[in-house]
Length: 377
Figure 1 (cartoon, rainbow, N blue to C red):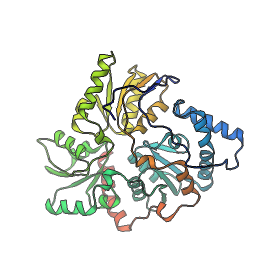
Figure 2: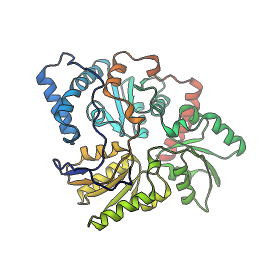
Figure 3: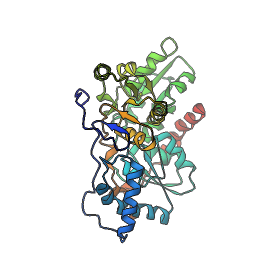
């Protein structure tokens, strides 16, 4: 995908140029109006298009087709007192159409914990909804797409961690937040892409085990060289694994030959060679904020090395001229959830859509998250 250097036709209607972004999702079938008038639907369609700020991909026709569902979801949220949160990688019709809050999984789990509502709907992948349940055990947590997994989370089991602990007695186990509740329950501390380095530096001892992301683990090994030995599990994010240092260099060289000073911003789930070629490294939320900051300073030619949803957020949340150059990689798991799934879960959730965790798992997993909160704040 990233090897292809030809530019896709740009959209300049909002001062943005976007290359190789996925098409906007359409309803899976006939939706109907849910009793809303043409005027209500048109007003909602205009609201969606204005909020998303990508009129070429999210045409008024597309927004009209989605408007009845966003109207009905927002009505049901109010009626049932549901707090609807969505990860940044969800599609813009969800993040700007129906979500009450949009961020990374760490921030959203805290918001779920602190929200007054007793029902949380988490539009995301499974491990994120489980994390929200761990920090909010007395709340009802709904997950619209039970089969929406994650290559990192699905790539490691609790038994894998138990085996690592037996082979390395007494060595603290650090798990990336992209893990199941069962895995978190076997670990000493949980971390995110924003705090993994600072927390690992604070841990006592000269050894640690890091699971499951081998790319982040490799970065830890480099940063903690001479201070701590880091044993790394062999897992990866299938999205960020698509990017390579060679591909980034090709983009930078191509842009330089055309007089473009490309600024590359990358997620730490990428390979070390990608991070070496990058000008800035951070979590999805940090990347979004940095891109918006750079655009405000006149740095308009940016490349975001992460999932496509971050680019969607940058485009929606800046009014400055901005060229997003290159390709993004779409997470098939994150994009599994559509408005229809959210609407169905709000109306009549199935048992699979209600997050139900064993009390012992919650108790032990909460210790790893509490330790993260303690060390990070």
